[in-house]
Every structure is written in C-alpha cells, then in structure tokens.
Amino acid sequence: MNKSIKKWIQILMILFVAGSFPMIGEANEQGLGFSIRPIHPDNQLDKNQTYFDLKMEPNQVQELEVMIRNNTDQEIIVEASVNAAITNLNGILDYSWNLEKAKELAKNYNQHTSTEKIDVNQIKYDSSLKMPLPSLITSEKEIKVPAQSELPYKMQVTMPEKSFDGIILGGVRFTQQETTVKETASDKGVQIKNKFAYSLGIQLRETDELVMPDLKLDQKKIKANSVNGHTGVTINLQNPAKTLMRDLEVKMTVYQKGSQKKLISSTKKGLKMAPNSNFDYGIDWNNQPLRAGNYTVKALIENHAIDGEPSELNKKWEFEETFTITKKEAKKINDQAVDLDEPTISWWLYVVIGLLGVLILLMAVIIARNHFDKTKEVQKKQDLNRKKQQLNQKKRIKASSKKSKIKRKE
Image (cartoon, rainbow, N blue to C red):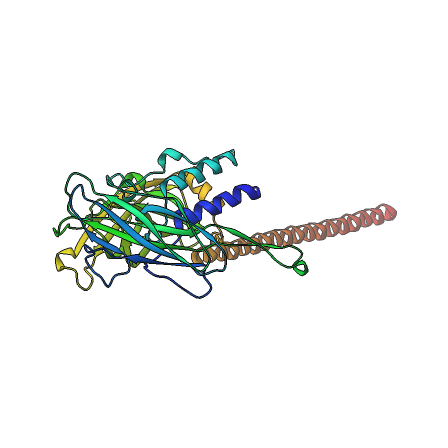
C-alpha cells in the first residue's frame, strides 16, 4: 500500500472513529489560539450549562451567538461547521462528524486507490434521523478575527413546522484554519502547522414529554471486521428514538452455532448513544484468527438512568442472532490484523504425539527383537546342519577306511 493511500485511510479513520469533543462553552486552555463563549438566550433551560439547551416552538426562528476570542497577535480565520451528533465506534458522543466532509474525503480516497473503494452512497445519517441539526441552522462557514480581539459568530435556527417530542442533538465545530509558521534560518526554514478546534453542543426541544429509549440490533449488519486493528466481529446497534442514552452497559457472548460453550465474550460499561444514531459495537477476537463457520451471538444491553433522570429510563434488551463468517472474509480480516497469534497446539495433542512416539519405539524394539531371534535361530540351525555334515563326513571317512583294511587282508 503506497503512502498516499495510507494517508487517506488515516484521515478517514480519524473522521469516523475519533473521540468526541465535550460539549463546552468557553475553552481557553493555555497555548491555544482562540477560545469560544456562548451567549445564552432567555429560552436556555439550564443557565449553568456551557452548551445551548433550548426549548423552542414549531416554526420558531431564533439567532444564536457565540463569542470567538483571538488570543494571538495576528489575525486568524476560524472555520465553523454545524454537525449532527453521532455515536462513534467507541460508544462516545461525537459532535465533530460532518456528512459533506466525510463524502468529500471518501471521494478523494477513491481517486487514490484502485481496490476496495468506499461506497459514497453508504455515507449517510442514521435512517431514523429525519431532522438533522444542520438542516435547521444557517450560518457562515468561517469568520476572521483580528489579533487580540473578540467577535460574535451568529447562527440562525429555524424549527420545523411539525411539533415533535424528544430532542434534536448536535453541535457547531470551530476549527482554526491551518497557519504556516516559518522558523529562523538556523532551523533551515522548517514549516510547522498548528490546528485548534472546539465543539459546542446544541440541544433543541419543544415539549417536556418523556421519550423512552429504544434499541435495535440489525442481524444483517453482523460481520467479520477489524476491531482496532485486531480480528473481530462488529454488531450494529441503533437508537431510533429522539432521546439520549447516557449510561449503556453491553454484554455480548459468541458461540459456535449449536454449541453452549462460550467462544468469545465482551462487556463494556458507560457507553452513550446519541438520539437517532447507530454504531458498530466491536467484539475483539483476542488476537486469535477468525475461522469460517456459523456462529450465534447473545446480547444483554441495559440503559441505566443517571442522577436526575426518571427511573422509567431504566430499560433492558436481550437479543440472540446467528451469523456466518465466510472463508474469504476470515482471510481478509486475518491478513489485515496486527499481533495475530499463531494457532496454538492443545496439551492433549502433545500427549497424543508423545504416545505415538512411544508406540513407534516399542514397535521398532519388537521388530528388531523378532529379527534378532529369527537370525539367531537360523544361525543355530546352520551350525547344527554343519555339525551333522561334519559328523556324516567323519562316518564316511571311517567306513571307507575299514573297507580298505579288509581288502588288504584278502
């Protein structure tokens, strides 16, 4: 794989797998180029939260402001993108994923590779997300902020006509445009690129109606896959409800189909799921190679209500599904895996090999002994025959001598 393809793969992995940015208001860590501060409107539900948490009405239009402060001594350009909240592969809320940018990166990647192209049409929001946040907000894509100054960034929110229960969740991501800084001559003109980014959460609702969590497991999307570079299986979980699940516990066990013996187990706690989102839950195969065959997965998933949430949000789901790993799929994932253990030999196989060795040795001893006994017996018979021949010869000589004496007397 050439370097350009590796570069695009790394970019895509960052885009799809990167951990979420927290919902922050003002973030002014030392050394960063800029900071942000939301201006909460009157319909902000919780003034203590740093993100926007707004209760609105159907068809309502409202302007939101975020103050952007430039902490440097030169003008900066801050790019802004409004994104829907998704759930990443680690079960973390992610406010940085942008649909248009994801498609653009996929197209660029496809131009640099001749194999395993990405299906751009498959890059889309969850099927249950009918009103993604970007479709409700209009704003500029960038803002220039003079040195050591502060300017407002404005967004216009337009709520849908039809009223809804639950929440619409997303965020606006602010990224400082890359700047190139030339070092002194002693550094031989080395160029350093710095990039800073923040995400600010935006949560919209219209009613106080409690929306119950829901969870679906798609059997068709269970497949052999790479899990953090290792062999494994991914199982797609979907939250089709307009509610945020803040504390999920997932337990999954894989069996060979028809067997009750556990093959692989996986447990993860403290996962989160954004409203109307899905993610591929990964089951690591413990560095063992995948093998073609039919399997069964049993899943127990619980949503725990956190402090301040009603107990009705405590829910439990159980699933049992079968899936197949083909030889082609197993080989592909095994070839891509890192730190793959070589197939191990069970202790009983060593015992069998040892017993076979002893048996072969015994047979060799028996054969050698039989051969020795037969050789000894043949030798004994030969010696006996030789003695008989010698005795007969002596008798013939003695008889011949007697005849000669008789003739002389006559």
